[in-house]
Image 1 (cartoon, rainbow, N blue to C red):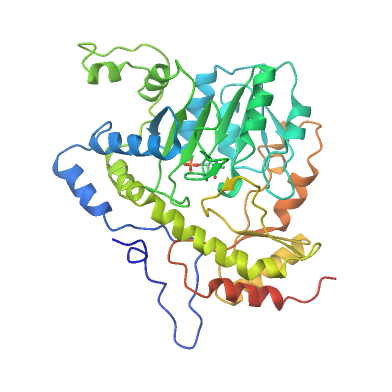
Image 2 (cartoon, protein in one colour; image 1 turned 45 degrees about the horizontal axis):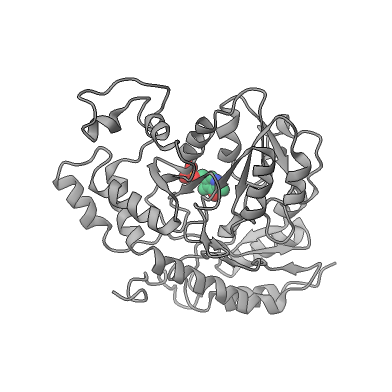
Length: 395
Ligand SMILES: *Cc1c(COP(=O)(O)O)cnc(C)c1O
């Protein structure tokens, strides 16, 4: 099956009107139903079945991580990561404010303090100089978010982490199949969390994975994921009956979503290539319109191979951004904003600290994301470019 043949058709055109383009359209490969049928037919719907094993193998191959465990979400994977590090009250964890709440919650749930570091203007990911400045004797971890599927400079962050003897964790929710200097996201730090939420490139509705690259953690992670029991030893025939051996939760992915995910992972390269082509169409159409102080386009750092997760524009102001979103909607193209900075959110103000975060405050208000999915109607990038070009001149 060629990747082109597998792509969905564009949404139904309305006569006399340009095809409406939704922001996201979860990709379906066509094999999900057969694998679901197989799992149901085999009465193998719990966890740790054939499809879960296959997904974990596929993910090890795609990420280069030493071990990969499927989880019920990226949030669950981040929570397992926080437990594995043993971080607790009195400890500090450095992370960006420009991220999803789960990145912070995982450590707040352990009683740790989150310390927000500012982001870079051109990648919207952690500014390493700001991270270095935020390190104190209490710092126990750095969590880097690969925004838009563009991996952070993890070699520099890991070197910084090693100098201070602290954990470095990838929030790779958006970054499956992205790489930096030839090394895939998921293999770049101690631990990494992935998401298979329906808004991500590869999805099973709700799902995630934890990648582990530090020796000695896998056994503990298996217990954490399995309600604090050594059920894995039981499944492997190492014990006759399983026991409660530690703390834990129910963080495993069920076999039914794993069957769905297996189909998606079989086509992961093709899905990524289709997204990269759509991303490049935007770059080709919009980069010529980039003008400082008016429209900025993403910069991909040298050595990064991204996965086409997201194409965004940064406008001169919130007003210009909102105007462009409205103008695109009027043209049938659904663009959206992204994260509200956590330190400005109702639950985040308490953790804001006194570290200034000027870019985390100004950039999200100026950012919009464009529709991006495999099978995005041809000509979408040109339609967006026409709307951008027709915007009234900046005041
Ligand atoms: C999507 C996302 C999450 C949460 O993923 P879930 O699988 O929905 O828990 C966490 N962090 C980042 C950066 C994300 O984009």
